[in-house]
Image (tube, rainbow, N blue to C red; front, side, top):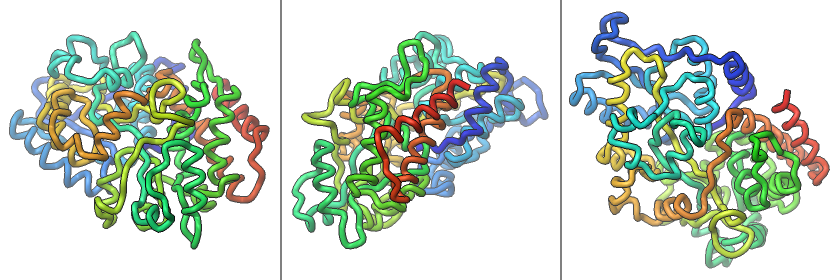
Length: 437
């Protein structure tokens, strides 16, 4: 759900080296007084089908908070393509929001800047306690052994979405459970100008999410035990090649997908141009594009063989959105009240139902709505077969460097250039050198 830029990684690296701790430009109604400011600024990430849809969803909830507390929240919904750059600029300029959403995979990187409020025991108690949240969500909120840099807001995992009619027309009676089955089915589905599987070759974050999971299945973590980049192991190379080969060798992804960016694969799926897509919670987007719930099905992401589980049967990264507070906001108490409101049982049920995500708050998960077929698959995946991306300070540089390598390999495949083990390794070696420099 994020699309990073190389400039963001460079900026973050610089801020870490410099030890930047300044940030947070919280506003107040009295022109800067520290006493009871009545306004918070909030950068929300784009979760729905559009920026306007998010504003429509969030505004009534923010009005509730204002009525309860007297604190007005100034909302800005920031596109994923811009969000990390905006955050990093705020950490260096000191002109940022009071509260913001971050992708959970950025947590350790942003934590290392010192810009975000640490969620120690005292701060967690102010919002009801750490025990309210599921463990996997908190584990994806910062470096292990340190107070989290953020609080879980929406939990997500990947699933395989498939078009029921296209499957029936091809004589396929069930979604694929293994990658071999997916390729076999994909060849039946890729015909008459339609394709089996959607991808977003120019979406760096999505490239990382898919190849990280395949890396887990090939026994690769992309980082060694000391947190150093290890992009050229046999497992990492095999994982990236397998993903790109869906286009280059298996020919079940359209060559044009090499240029696709955020959400374009979802549009193709909703319009019946592709039969399958690997994505995080997608029901809201499908509905917004006119697709009916009975038109599509959902299943776990395939594994090499057998059923999803831990280790080499991992089939998703632990996805989700966290909520952070800039450390030197002028309204720390108001910011914590807002986080408490957004992570309350009641708000978690409302927001996660609307966005099709899983509440990271345990009590909210008891709502029957989260037992619906799509959300059950996501819940089961998070509970049994998802792994967090590496919580290392340079994780965002990893997303940019390796995500770009995959993008370039998709471009090669689309152009008809051979994608070999050697060419994949060469791209990953270049990515690793970028990290080291």
